[in-house]
Amino acid sequence: MDPISPLEQALHAARALVLADLVAREVAEADVVSLVEESVVQRRWWVEQWPEGAEFLAGLVAQDVQDALLERYGRWPLCPVCGTGDQHALEVEPELGPDPHWVCHQAGVKVAAVGALGGGGASASS
Image 1 (tube, rainbow, N blue to C red):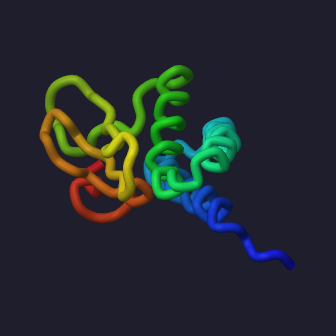
Image 2: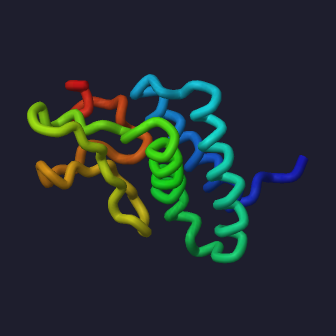
């Protein structure tokens, strides 16, 4: 059996992190999981062209899924930090960089690493 390439490992890791956030926020229905799969397919080509970008995959897949969900269903993930005012979505930072996090720009705080929305901290209040 051939070992899994570093690029495939990075793609699988990005997929797993985004799926963990979808499960944590209870939106991991089949059609939503399909959005993750579509992003992974598109990002596979991208990372094959630019292997140095493998460490950016988790944030990019999270942004792809967030954009696709916005078009079809609405904002995701909703901010668990701000209890008043208009509901708003968290954003991924950095937009293109390693160690992506979900951030609330209104409160100016990091809420959770991508893949950790179900963990403790501010996200536990949702």
